[in-house]
Figure: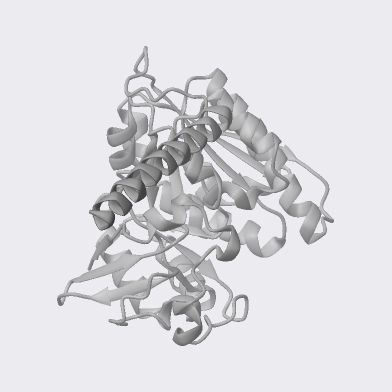
Length: 347
């Protein structure tokens, strides 16, 4: 009898504690995440905006010789142009528009995409550089909201497979959602030398499957140390070969590739100090607003990030990783959700 009484009291206390936790969490989320989730825009848009911000001659070369020709493939911006989409590429950098048009790749993509260049000062310290990235991103978000555009945030060191853009636009088209996807880091030197020559032949098409194959062969050390690891670590970069042609990949920090921005997204970035919150705290906002969607199949969308071989250290030993989850003491909801999302890369 006494045992049953203790159980009833314990149950009652837990019920009150659970309701208290739910009410507190709800108040926090309602205060900071006021957007109501919607799934349909009022008007189906035919506008797409692309963003890139960078400085340094190395990145200028990558934009002109790798990023832009990969965007300008048959089933990327060219197909979207034929389908009637009005596309604008907003480039924020220390270089003039004339610098870009020295490249034939830029002249060719300009047939499908309007190029807008915003210049800023050349000499930026690392800390101020991230602040500049953030300011320019806010300007881009504002432009995208005003033009009711589908928006894609690119980086200067990206290479994208053919048909990736058109596939993502079909998915997001008239939905108020954001699309996230996992990508690998690859060795800069090998990729730049190979693909800068590859894109000089206009007949070459970089399929997603071929890009996956080359990426697996040339993984940066921050990713290669987790290739074929079967310990199922709950952190960071994880790639497992599950068949001759399919790899399973997972990452705690996932890139949001395509977005439908809202005014609250501008307010979010106005409250943070730099661009890097784009794959840290901003995805949590999208999840709580039911705007976060994950694209898992590389045949739909795939890109790789060229990374200098000495830029990032090899991840710490696996024993350390098991007790130190990604995000550390500031780990948020999005890390936990990303850790259970698997991408499937097909070669």
